[in-house]
Length: 112
Length: 115
Image: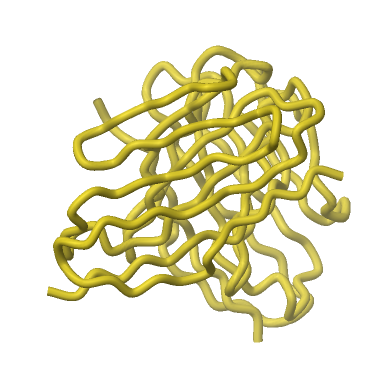
């Protein structure tokens, strides 16, 4: 059974702080990993799809890395802004299928 | 380009009733997945539809069923509602078929409350 874990569960930072959180998954049978940002009352928004060990992806102040050998991905936010406040979800494919297994999410609050 | 839409936004039902939730996929997307998100948890995969057929199912009982239509819109039906079915139901559409790793585009969800 594929189990995806995220830590921490929640995070409170000040505006301007940089932060990072972790997504852990079984390193065997890895296919692809997705990061989503989910703001309150909106739809989850895709940030990155990562497939290769050592992948690094960046979108503005947000970046992500992937280590499939040890089974983790980090999401970094540089210089957090209040508009970054959201729940960040990671999800892995269950086998070679489109079925996504989600972690429970990390909720980020950025205080002005 | 229209995004993924879901209806209704909120719904209140009583135990034992049946409910139908609807999803309109993003234009050009041929695959739709449904997820249930209970409070404090990540979304849980219910099932996926491709070319109007179910293609993969999560750990949900048969009273959860679905349909996909030729225009790629989709329905989630839940019979004999139970209190534990209270949750946010999300649909997500994607292109490239059921075995692709393409990003899935989510709708805003339907909040179902079962009393």
